[in-house]
Image 1 (cartoon, one colour):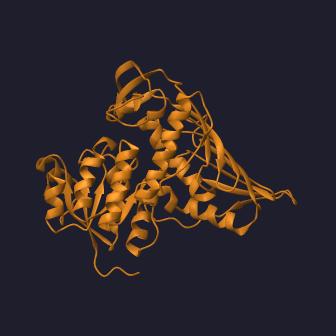
Image 2 (tube, rainbow, N blue to C red; image 1 turned 180 degrees about the horizontal axis):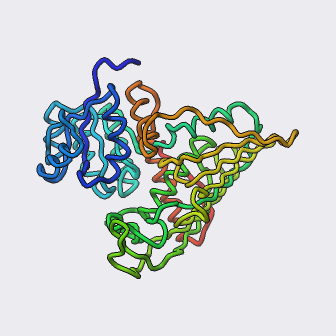
Image 3 (cartoon, helix red, strand yellow; image 1 turned 90 degrees about the horizontal axis):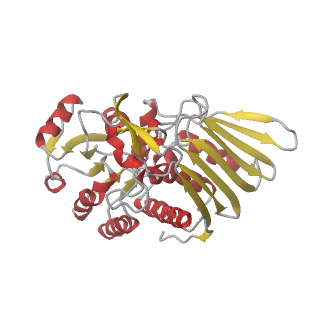
Length: 378
């Protein structure tokens, strides 16, 4: 599918102070002829104008409400890059006005809100994207190819262990992410930090090996007290943290594939060594290693190896080509590329499944790790 004219993008939450949008969304949007940024919406016109000037968005108009931005007739795709607690109220008006929408993961603070937006989008006939972007990346497509080749035969088990690889999951929390320290935050259903980390990784696993059918979960707090930092400087020390930063999950995926997933907060034992994932088949085995379990963020050192049981040989598989963008923008950029081409991208329906899975994670933990059978809306 060729694009006849650029898709006009309105961004909610672009800040001149930095954050996720400039490092992940802007690199592709500003370099691709498929898109043009025509609007920026923040809580104040002043902050919008600062962002427009900072990032040289000469084609963008300033708005202080989603409604006025969508009613302008100047936007095709609304991109929401703000904290999850505001997603529902910001995205619902855009969908009601028939705009396509791209929302960062998690979709909403609760599964119920997420399901409502997915149903609303279906009724309005708008296209949706959820920020589970690792599924669009080159590591994912490489693994798809290896699995489809039959080299390891029937998949029997998946064993993934890793660390978050970021200070926010360990003994330090940036002041921007204070809600990461709380087990319950602003009406969110389940813990926000774990929802982000578990949701992102398990979407990657499930999209390759099948949806989880059963689940047992145990969560723990490794770091009960943390330092709050700003720009690397400690501004408050020894702050109590109630949010869990350790998760151990296991159950059955797809076609009777046994799985285990162990996540721990904090840095890896040594830099660049935050992931070991074994996909075990009856003819061979795949091992994926790299800096972090967060495939959505990406890493420069991901390695995929395949072992043939019969010969004992281990081969390092060349990774597929990635977009020539900064690391944080590569997977997001591929999502935008696929969307413009009319190809498959992660949608709100995928988000609802992950929210339903996470509901089961938190419920199982509350019930001392009880095994649960899972059902999904989509």
